[in-house]
Length: 282
Image (tube, rainbow, N blue to C red):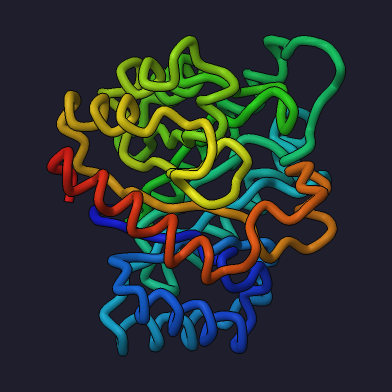
């Protein structure tokens, strides 16, 4: 999970054959090192088709997801384990390197009260089982801290670190996101410093989820912190342009955050790459 990548929501959130061909062609055009594939419906993915496309274009991949309500780990741990096992196997079949994201819960999962110890116990049980299954397939698992409006369980870098340390598996890591850190951390760069021993993947996302460099994220502080910890993981640009209704609801994306894909890729991508080069990250 090294280099510069892009979340394939830039082109599609439907990972069927047509979506895969469109997104991979786009990523190749922009000379990305890897792509992040959203597994909204893992069983339906044609893994061989994706793997063949990735190999043809010498493009690496990671996968990501949020758990559907019927498999929320905090209250339905057995269903969550089974859901993650299928996603892990599909990730391996595509020859992707990791499965990350909100693998501990749902995007839009909130109880209205603080998390309970029982919820965390269930999540630890799920992630322990998932990490063991992932290890059999050579897959790493990432725990992404997301903001309080999307999920009430793991919002900060410290909470992600605590869960990763509790599970204690060699193949589980922390995944951070500048959009979420901008809401939850006491200084966005502090989250990077807190997670430094476990941080292998970061979403580079603007404060409105639109075009990087045209919002309020303190990019110099972010990149300086990554350089300070000697970050060698994946740098993935994430902006949401093509949102199906169920995903838009969970993310509360109600209006266009950028004019189109070209605006984000032609303006935001060079901005982020230039910063990464400036701070010696690529």
